[in-house]
Image (cartoon, rainbow, N blue to C red):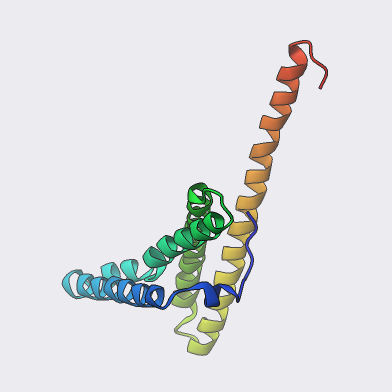
Length: 161
């Protein structure tokens, strides 16, 4: 599945889906604030690290993909699940980048706030993109031996590959 930006997706989004995102994102933020007030800023900050809109986003991504396949006369259930899984993987890798942002900012904030933000943004981008690239490379490598194994297995049964 290729990752790409599609501005036409804004037109396909129904008005109530924006409302769902807003409400669920707001509830996640309120929950993080309540946890922060009860258990301290460190705990609240951990929950703010979860993108507030992710819960609603994954559900809506799945429903959009499923609907688009069903319009074409196909079962879109599997495609919707794959799209939501890809969204979750991206959120997870972005969270790794968020840790890099936090570390870079906390180490450099005393010297210069503006410099700390600049360095933290660069750290986030480098770590997030590197994590995505590494994931793609590892998936490509892990797929290759299985295909090679099937060819060898077919050849060992006396058939010509």
